[in-house]
Image (cartoon, rainbow, N blue to C red; front, side):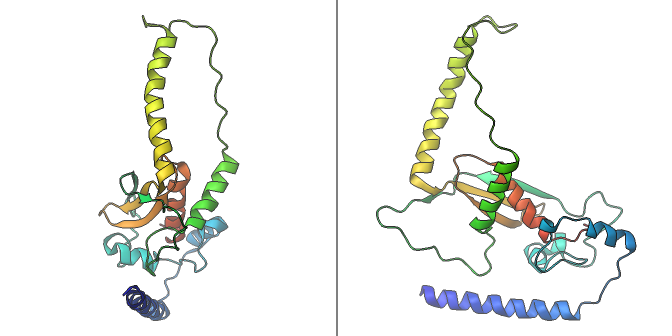
Amino acid sequence: LQWYATLEDTKSHQLQEAINSMQENTRPVVEVDDQEAHSADDIPAHNQTEEPVNNHPSEYLRERCPACFGGSNWHQPDEIADAIVCIDACFTQKCQKSQGKTSSVPHDHPSTIFVPPADVADTQSHVENVQPAPPKPKEPLADGFEPGMKVSAAILDECYESFQATDSNCVKASTKFFANTGLMGLLCHHDQVLWLVNMTSASEKQYYALCLLEHLFKNIPATM
């Protein structure tokens, strides 16, 4: 019955889009002063969506958490922040790699909260170009004692590397048997999930968080 579920989801999604379009057409236009308009022009192009958010959060965010982004009081100039979000990762939610033949592309819900893998790949490429990984430091040839320590540096390094070796073995196992090694999510302070990213690396990476924040900035106005 997957075809029927897909049909129902697509119908609901298109109906909601039609309702949102009618609401946008009937929404009163709020005048923006010159200072706010100038600040909006200073926003880089990559922070703007194809359908620019004028003076209110996007319909997507208002649906995800009406308390944070809905209503008419989402922007309070006297408050320190209009909304509070957090980012966290979880490595217990994995997706096992298919064995043998390549499996078909998984079914995506029309109203999915997962960031498209192409957007994650673009952010990863940008981060790696701007901030390439530093070269590994060379190991010192001479042994010695660190200040205040009675154990030689070689013994301390061996103890440290024993933990790294254990983690390294776990990393190789996770990337070998799992296509998605975990999830990273962006949540508001009401614990409502705004977006999720499928992680494909063995550990948390900076570009996952940056990709989530980029999606947030594309869905909020410049004055927020």
